Image (cartoon, rainbow, N blue to C red; front, top):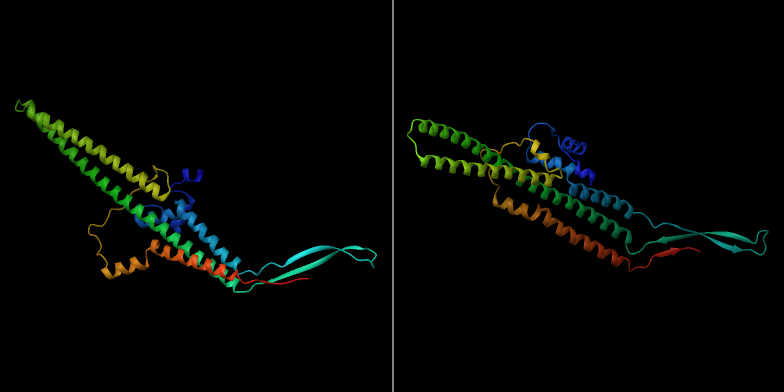
Length: 274
């Protein structure tokens, strides 16, 4: 928890994640760079990555042989100088029914499911970052437009003041200026609130402190959007590339492998002992 509270864009974990993606920590930020930094700061990604490492280690342990049993039994010999002695006994277990292969297959599908959880977590984080990124840029653009409107309104007020000094204005111009100034102040406060909300959403998606994204500069979106992919490509990616869909298939494979283990456990093992 303390590490989460103190996580910043200058942390060693984020610097290492950016170096792994061949990105520099300085300069402006875009969605791919923010997503790469989240690899070192987002707790969900780090947790599922640790789970995946654990499942990979389980593959090696699943292929190990049953341990050899060792026991020391107290024995009595009537024709010995020391009638009481210990007997050294070994107990060998030979698995039948393909238990070892079933365990290895179960460990492998567990690793595949854990890898898909990483992809799903990255997808969710990138989606949240993209939404906050667009909201931040839109709020900044609105704030700049309102700042320009404030300059124009100030020029209007100055012109009305000069006309008033000449005795050629009335109450209607003053009321109109006051109304426009109130609307502008309200919209400016709303734009500032939208910027803060976007920064908070971006910090939550990346696992940073709330005020941390306010200090970075975001790259502007291209003037023209990229050309959309074909419908066939979208359908193929939706069926084969969505982590949430693949995770369901992986869960089915895990259940099937667990069933195979239960089937192999029905076969008794062979034990060689005294």
